[in-house]
Length: 195
Ligand code: G4P
Image 1 (cartoon, protein in one colour):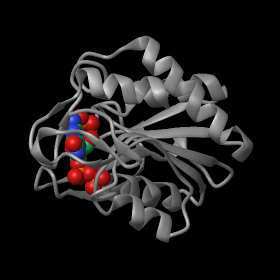
Image 2 (cartoon, rainbow, N blue to C red):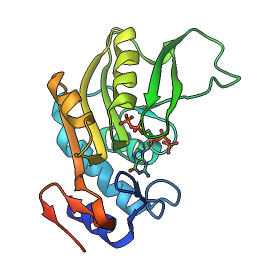
Image 3 (cartoon, rainbow, N blue to C red):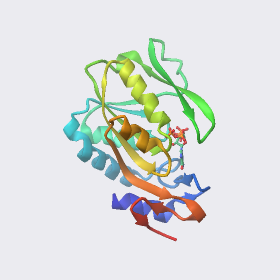
Image 4 (cartoon, rainbow, N blue to C red):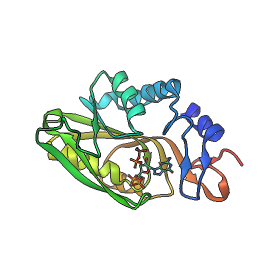
């Protein structure tokens, strides 16, 4: 997706060889026009799968996932990392270990929000090692529902998540694939975009 690649080149910052900062348009400040385009792109890629719900994990997945859900005309379910006061009913839960942050988070979804008739599209901002996506898959399967696809805004193709999810048979669509971040240069999977 050309607009996204251009935005990453113009406003992304390489923090380390493994981490890309995108606080100016995705993780902290959010570019609504770009999110609308991302939502359209995900909807175009996944409408044929007839999803009934979009599922994401708070917090940075919410902006692209909301726009995808809007374009697909289905509700967005936001998996929570902390149980809100109002979540009094039974929940689906999974544990997610972050290799990037070296911490384990619980992800929680209220049971009435997903059931066995659902066809769920998972959307997230980053794909690194795939643990967040696998946690969401587990929650969907606990509900007896199907995962019809996984949409990722930025895949770090030099980490294992994409391979792991694809090898398990999931259709993973990433709008930008980063090949490497070494020497402070953002290289896309297809070739060099800057530096
Ligand atoms: P994984 O789910 O693919 O295994 O990824 P990992 O555990 O390694 O990363 C977990 C968190 O770190 C996620 O945010 C993810 O978005 C973020 N992350 C991973 N790599 C990068 C990166 O290169 N740049 C940025 N900006 N973030 C990265 P989170 O803990 O869910 O936090 P939130 O921002 O969604 O609240």
